[in-house]
Length: 264
Ligand SMILES: C[S@@+](CC[C@H](N)C(=O)[O-])C[C@H]1O[C@@H](n2cnc3c(N)ncnc32)[C@H](O)[C@@H]1O
Image 1 (cartoon, protein in one colour):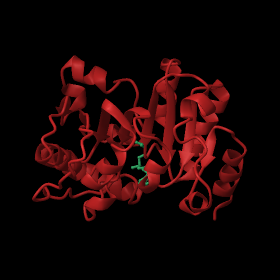
Image 2 (cartoon, helix red, strand yellow; image 1 turned 90 degrees about the horizontal axis):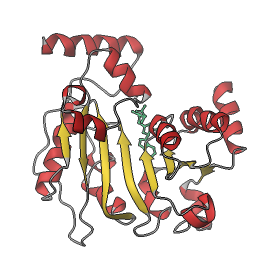
Image 3 (tube, rainbow, N blue to C red; image 1 turned 180 degrees about the vertical axis):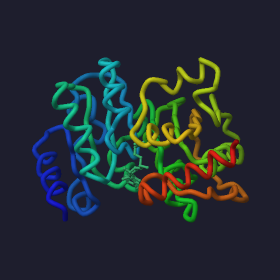
Image 4 (cartoon, rainbow, N blue to C red; image 1 turned 90 degrees about the vertical axis):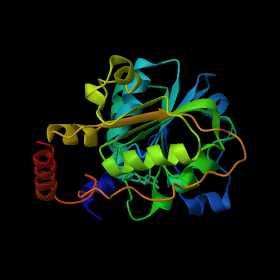
């Protein structure tokens, strides 16, 4: 493993607001703050907001700074990405932030029924080949509703036309009306931009914007009934580019150029 990654892993292990819980640990012991995030971890009664696939946790940190009367947990499995946000939290001495390093596949082991007030899902990998691995999918919706409050808002930001259309189809087939949906956030009415907190941009978002791409945004709530979620009958056409998580800089530039060309 590269030295820098190792150093970062070591550093975040020292921070008491970065919690590391892989599946192997949860097989041996229960997560101690499940149902007790407010009382035992944050020691405040404030609302609890999660950012899933947070990377460097740009939303987690920015929102925590603006909203001291809420608590924020950034979740990602990659420790070196979390490290960036964690260093900022340490420097700014924010007391209302935690990072949870784990696989979101087991997210429902960390939060109790109706414990979470809102979710942000920022630039998830579209996972075009495997719907079960999409952080937005019927599979993950089942997990999220095990801990979301009634009317809890889920906010998705994505660069992917595929994921945007898939999410609209997924909502429709499950009779969920989105509160907001736009395929071009920064050219949308003010009210929609405000709902997405326009001056907070994640690292991936910034990179896509610099390449002239439009950002898509959907906000909605899940019904908390027992009716199983359905998948849409068919998938939208796949994007001809991959997430910025993958591919070299050169590849990304070429693809963005192509997409811009297609738009013009
Ligand atoms: C494309 S990156 C976006 C990062 C950040 N939200 C941003 O916009 O800059 C997707 C992130 O989701 C994380 N991720 C994807 N699937 C995950 C899973 N099942 N469990 C935990 N993290 C996951 C990845 O590690 C990665 O950091």
